[in-house]
Image (tube, rainbow, N blue to C red; front, side):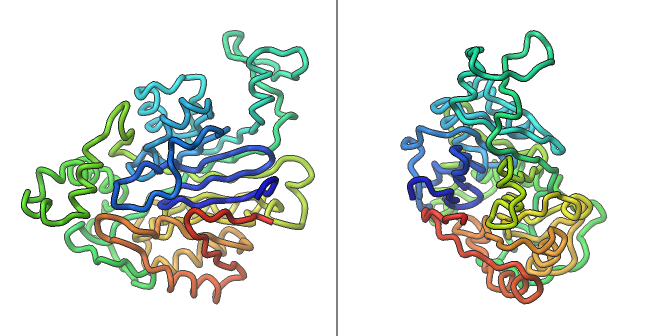
Length: 361
């Protein structure tokens, strides 16, 4: 795979993208509970340029502090995630807080280091506060990322009533209260998931090896351990694009770049207007869809099909957040979503196997 531009999947929403001489992680949940497959040892990671964090939850943010401190990677994330990483000792110079709407040039490590040392051979960005650290000029960027606000999916029921396997063909209608939304996800995380030891009888935890493994891992959180938050901090989408002529080429994946959307949620007005239209979408497919902050009436398959249409029917889509979990639902059946998207749009579904590099063109 040397010199190939690739995308690798490591479970949940964690991906490693290699493009234009850059190594970019999208989420970093690699040091997972022991009963889950480990596709990449976090201690073997020595070379990362940028880390893009979708949000601050337990299956997205942990590991970012470890990787960033070891590699010097720049972390692009919402303020909740940034604050947790700062508490964990990641230098402020590596933390870039965003909230959606930003466009960020991406530079090779050599260019970033030359700029930081104020090398006379490097063109620096002009203007800005005199106390700001030196930055490369945007004309030296090899790629760019556009950040957009997005939405966390909703759970179609409580942890007690969720099925073992969530079918993307199952349809949901209406709402339990007029105020159902992602605030319930935060409350459920803070007062439910983070307090399982208090809520679940000890004999039930002892007798369920999956649940016990998950509870023990989740309790090992905080600076120097698993860094996370009950609050997602504001879900983000990341649109990664090559710069220069390759970015406008009609051939290959780089005609429109890669859009990462970690959860089954979106603002319709945003996804309809993203330019350029992405060629490849990495899309979370778990849960009940969240459209414009309201529960979506229909199935995950219906929502995914609409989303691909709104995005201009990208050439390819890769599902994520559908793999093995230690609490219900234990996995997501994507059969219906794949069938709906491929019959209702021009988009083809790529079955990306965990740990296997996918050559982008």
